[in-house]
Image 1 (cartoon, chains in turn cyan, yellow):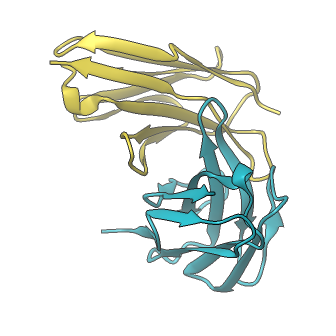
Image 2 (image 1 turned 90 degrees about the horizontal axis):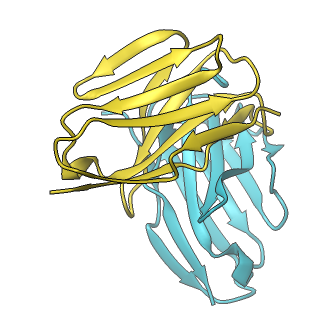
Length: 113
Length: 109
């Protein structure tokens, strides 16, 4: 069964802490994405990667960075968490750039106090 | 940028009813995605279609490229169909996908 696995389902962090969210896919997909999902705003793209060590900013990259050292793993980093980063974070992967089937992880619900 | 409108935003129906969720977009596309998200859960891809109709179990997705419109139908709806249904199309955002705001469906027993 194909899978996108996110490391943590629920996290609670304090303002200013560094936060790592990890995502691993077992489908040998080149393309991986990090989204955040907020009520009334839908899914918004934070960062994406089309290859190892390659990263591109999405629509809302401020306050985030990413790392893709291996094809199967795409990490989202919050260097200094803030309360407005409280959200649901979803990782996705796909084979084709915009026409491939999308596979999502279960999501990581982050609360920043 | 492709603008995506989904309707209705919220829908409550009784078990067994036929459900239709609509998605309209502003710019011609190569493929459209329908996604499902259960409460507290991750997102699952239901369909990716570029023309005509696709069926999977009780779910049917149709697309009319000329009218820039797609529908997701659920036959013999069941409480386990309660979820948010999201459509996504190319043509917007840095990764080329624009997502609708979703339709929140509740099926009551």
